[in-house]
Image (cartoon, rainbow, N blue to C red; front, side):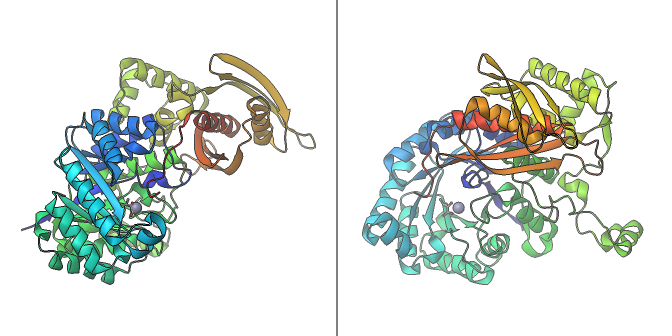
Length: 513
Ligand code: KIV
Ligand code: ZN
């Protein structure tokens, strides 16, 4: 007999809390669709009460996603819970996830509430939520550092009020696998009505043990839901990584004896999409989704793998969605071949007009780049600076001059809404000159906290460059991503995209405040 492990993805909520990872409504919607293709059981789409933008994102995802349960976070108060319920109204399956801190430290210093007040607020919140939605998750924030006696009382109370999932967060990443596993087991054994709820684990990665702790919570503690994010995205050192937990449970089914509903072939596309959208690059040696995860450089390993694959491989690259770096399309490929490749890559277009626009961009790219890889198509479809119709700033044209011994010079034309601007500037290098020219008109005053260039397909200078620009202004951090065979053009696109986000994003309340 095997039972099922529920995969709860919180990339769009806890992952997005990572400074610089905030996403627009459309970006979240695109990722949610990919999470649905990945067949995650629950998508935590956001924190509806935190901002109008997040409310709209949760609602759009609730409307679009049909297979996965869509969830919104809510603090333990009526207003947050009502906002969550309202945003989730169009969902086929909805969940409200409400939380309040239960550790002495958080209750005393942050909430300034007594134990009894916290207990009462948790009770009333779950009672209120349960009247609006049948599927209620409750989290005692900083649960792992909470007094076990008090925690048992809180959990018993909220289960009595109708909570259907109990999630025990290691909010600050303090746990050790064996201790965390035993902690979950102890709670399940001591709470009298524990069998009325599904137990869930939620681990942060501050000591690099989020995945190990989550698996211990499952194996030792008997939890049947894991909360995780794509690429382990999340505040500070991040959250438990979805791809690692899923592949551990699938690969070591002999040990865990659990089923997961995930379609693992969608893991790499999901990883790429999240990395491209947030600008958080995946380290090459990252398990499962890192560029080197399946690369055998040493002669002994290569020899072994060629003779018998399982000498050095415990998983197959293609089973987690790696496709060979092969040329898929070229200049002569037609619209049908392009459309078919989009389908094979799991990229859905809303309308024929969108396919036509993407095809026009593909033709433009194919004129400048002889070999088009899957990665190029993914970048082309996801390039925010051309897809996001609501982007305020858009690149129109760019000319730059650089010569040994001369100061580089750039002239750029860009649109700001309906108005076209033409500006020029010098700089230390061509990219610097281009961004200075834009800034001379926009005057954002933003500080650049990250500028990075990555080759979309490795191994050749023919590759497109993907540029990420992270800007900080007035306490907010945003990312812009742009791709082009010319990295100066990619830089201009990325910068204009980041400026558009700075201009448009509304303020939001951080989840744990
Ligand atoms: O880490 C945490 O405690 C959380 C809760 C809000 C579930 O993200
Ligand atoms: Zn968290």
